[in-house]
Length: 292
Ligand SMILES: *[C@@H]1O[C@H](CO)[C@@H](O)[C@H](O)[C@H]1NC(C)=O
Ligand SMILES: *[C@@H]1O[C@H](CO)[C@@H](O)[C@H](O)[C@H]1NC(C)=O
Ligand SMILES: *[C@@H]1O[C@H](CO)[C@@H](O)[C@H](O)[C@H]1NC(C)=O
Image (tube, rainbow, N blue to C red; front, top):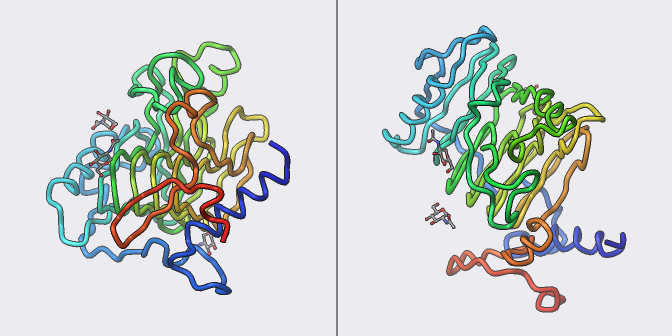
């Protein structure tokens, strides 16, 4: 794509989606796009048997804590506190109305056991699968069809331990598309802030078919030669606001996407959708209808 088109696109991304909520001339920031919620109900991963010794597998603790949030449905949602320590775990699903809070010195660390990593269907806008045909590995921290989810804290770390995946990619022994570190599919009202992302197996943060997503004060790090470790890839999504972040990875820092080649075109969900809160319609933004 020629550079002038890209800058035009970026201009649109910033100005169009927020025009309904921010007065002309006002400084546009992410503040207020998704309200940061205080949650009265707080639980700790330690209450569910979580052990932060870097060796114990905490999959059961994460899944049970989040199951409890999902099924007790406390008013205002629940906060899951991760105390200082290194919590090794397999991938897990988040649920709606929750905050995942990483204390200073807390690390949620992905297992390197690629054999037992859950598989899910390829995204329709990626057709047969981005790297290999068939399924794809679920993201390490996954959200599907969620609303009102916050990942935040005191700059704790989500560590993907991606080197085993990078080696499989280099040696061409990957069986399926590598997992993202954090992915939200078909979700809205998401905040990701004050978290450090380290060594993702593939892309770091991937909001797809989602809206109203705020990503700020994050640090995303991966070696410069790590394959496809994109920082943030907003994909077929609307109202995604990214600010005040530090990203240094092996590939794109922020890459706006709408699927992959002919699969993305066939699926036909563009990058820019506009949400009309009056009647809750979400409609693709068209170039000429917005040139006012
Ligand atoms: C996690 O979410 C994926 C995608 O929605 C689903 O296929 C999978 O069964 C879920 N896993 C668990 C353990 O709930
Ligand atoms: C998206 O998630 C909502 C729940 O938040 C659900 O009602 C809807 O069916 C989902 N749509 C798709 C395409 O998965
Ligand atoms: C966390 O990191 C962000 C971004 O670098 C910084 O603005 C913020 O002050 C840090 N917060 C704490 C509690 O250290």
